[in-house]
Image 1 (cartoon, helix red, strand yellow):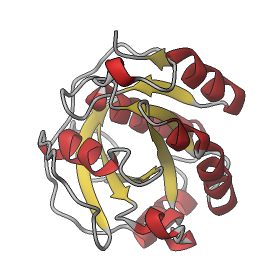
Image 2 (cartoon, one colour):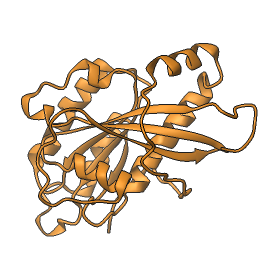
Image 3 (tube, rainbow, N blue to C red):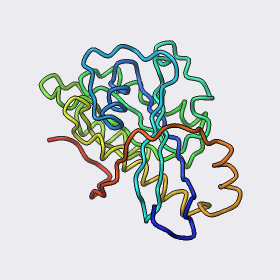
Image 4 (spheres, one colour):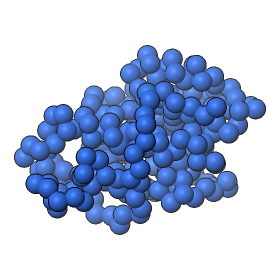
Length: 217
């Protein structure tokens, strides 16, 4: 991290990934954090999260990214999962319309358990399955627009837009926080209280052009 008045300060933002079972949440996380994809991955058991770092405005920003770890199968994602989250990716599978229909329920749950300032992105995953697409790009864009969300289609299989999606959310979090209380004593106290010490699993520092809506061709 560049030397400045903030030298030694650690900015740690909690991001949650939510959505129906088998939409590819765990593979999105593993593709972003470790550049890995497991076509035979099973539902995660227990809490799983990864920490990624990137540089924004000369500061090191860490995102602690949480996966629902299979709880969504039982409609039992708890308020503790959302606690402290300042970013969320709501994921559906473009080849299964039922997962798209569930987005409204996930948004309602997110709104119930988190602050209104959470940076939110709607993610249509598995865009490599264009030949069996069940949810149009336009439908995804429209739903995102109606709910004030960023929107992007991704593929954990071939890496399409995965890094861009996560980094866009992290940058939006940073922008939201820096506009308000990034340097306030109360925020730093909250940051310290909620910090979870984890090994840094990799860096994602490239700066990319961003648009509110993006999808694979």
